[in-house]
Length: 97
Image (tube, rainbow, N blue to C red; front, side, top):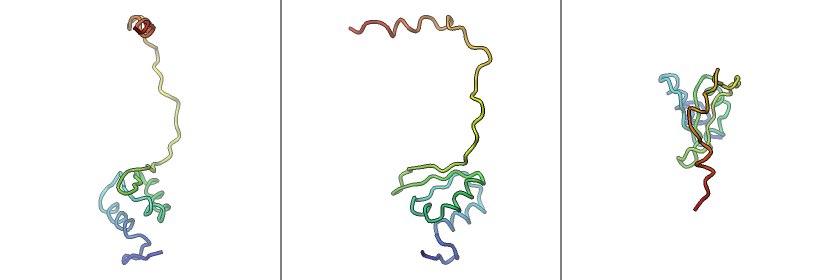
């Protein structure tokens, strides 16, 4: 395990720590290797409201975001009248030529 000049284990995440303290960042992009090395720090950032994008050779591969309980699904109070839209089934049921 390498120790950076700043005293942290990973210089990339040390830089992110400094940037997050000075700038409000909602999205952080980290390589999978750097993220694996300091997963606990990334989880703390996610808990604080950041979204983490994990990359492999610069290409986004995964997203770490906060877990949120899902509520009741949104529903319309009164559904539309299907007659307003005409006959939607007939064009689909036509024989193919």
